[in-house]
Length: 113
Length: 117
Image (cartoon, rainbow over all chains, first blue to last red; front, side, top):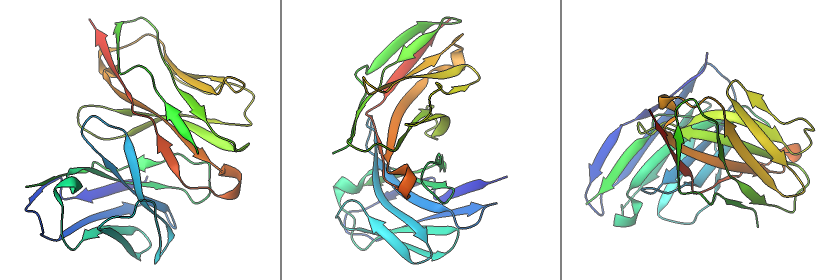
């Protein structure tokens, strides 16, 4: 069966510090991968998605970036965090193709102070 | 531009009763998919049910069914025989271009469901 891991679970970082959130998927090959952010009490905002190694599409221009160094690894980064980067970050995967549901990781709660 | 609207910020339902969570969408694409997800207080997002725009039958998954009315652009989630564990946030989502490999999924603002004992 497929599983998706995210870490860390919670993170408190000062403004201006760097960020690296990691997501890995097990039990599937060539998945589509996604990073979402959820502000408190709000819906999900798609940040990045990837259909293959090194292939990243950005949905929201900001100080975040994503990378996919391996087939089942997706990394969200920032060189300098802003207060507005606080939120709940969710990684998700789906089977390659269009009409498949997404499966989400447990999320990382980021607080920028 | 695609848009998902969930007009009920919060809903209460008595245990063992059915409840309908509303969702309307806006798209100019002919090929799209509609999804419902559940988010308990733990934060994880759980896939519940999927309806394709070309599916003629309403989707069902156990106690969940999707009331798909294409002409009205609505995709309401019906939960039958509510249980206390159904208390959670519920999100409606849509992906356009499913026939051409579209990937962007947009989510509604969510409806918080409270099940009363």
